[in-house]
Amino acid sequence: MPAEHAHLSPDFIAQQRQRLEALRQQVLGGELSSNARRRAFEEDHGDEAMEFEDEAQDSAGEEVRQAQRDTDAQRIDHIERALQKVADGTYGYSDLSGKPIPKARLEATPEAIFTVEEEQADERR
Image (cartoon, rainbow, N blue to C red; front, side, top):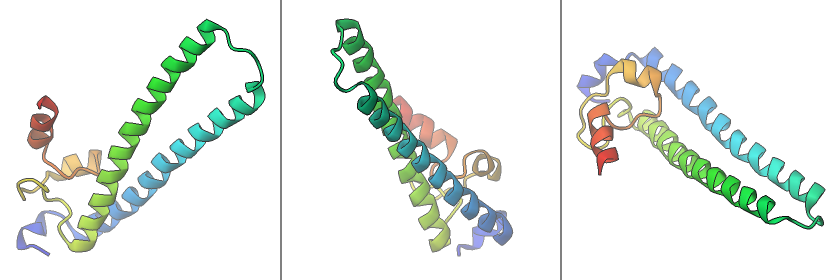
């Protein structure tokens, strides 16, 4: 564990690991629930003729669902990476610069693997 890691106590890191594992289950559970609802709808309405408006609405809904799946996939990647960093003893340090991530950020976003500034710069690109 890096000497600078003193800004995060072992208890805090253990608590964050538990939060990350619960968050992973929550995000994965949401995806499974969404898929189950879609399948149930298709089973209930699969043989019905669709109107043009229904197709357009379904298409728009699929775009929203795809955007949510993309967001969830990225979040799962960050959660998995944060859990790996806990195991490696590097949790709380940016993957990009190695700078410490403030504890307040980790409390708000336990899967954070970049500083706020680094993440904002990435979003601008």
